Image 1 (spheres, helix red, strand yellow):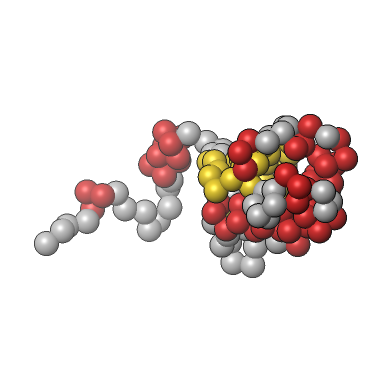
Image 2 (cartoon, helix red, strand yellow; image 1 turned 180 degrees about the vertical axis):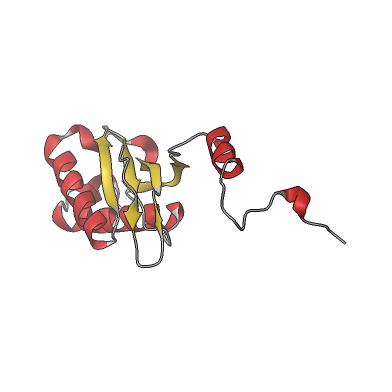
Length: 146
């Protein structure tokens, strides 16, 4: 993981996510090393193109795990959509024999897994907010609701 915060023009933060997606019908097409290496290269190209910072990548015979730093404006769903779309298009273009396995051109299954990776627990976050000594800080009790 990365412990450093990413600085953007008007914000700072750490937006780590675990993304996972599978081949359609769970075919084990990445058991072949040349296809696995082509996918690895394409994932890194896509990450660079879409400003996704890959932290860890694991390509298994029938699915992919990626831990990545996403831009704060990019959702997990958008990241997976971009990665699956780019890699599928380019794999079919560079390895035409994949069309024999996937004649309709659908390399990836519809489903996926996504999870955010927190740097701290919710209790630590609550403690951090509670222990701030900022001049303008107010607790919930300071607000009166009408």
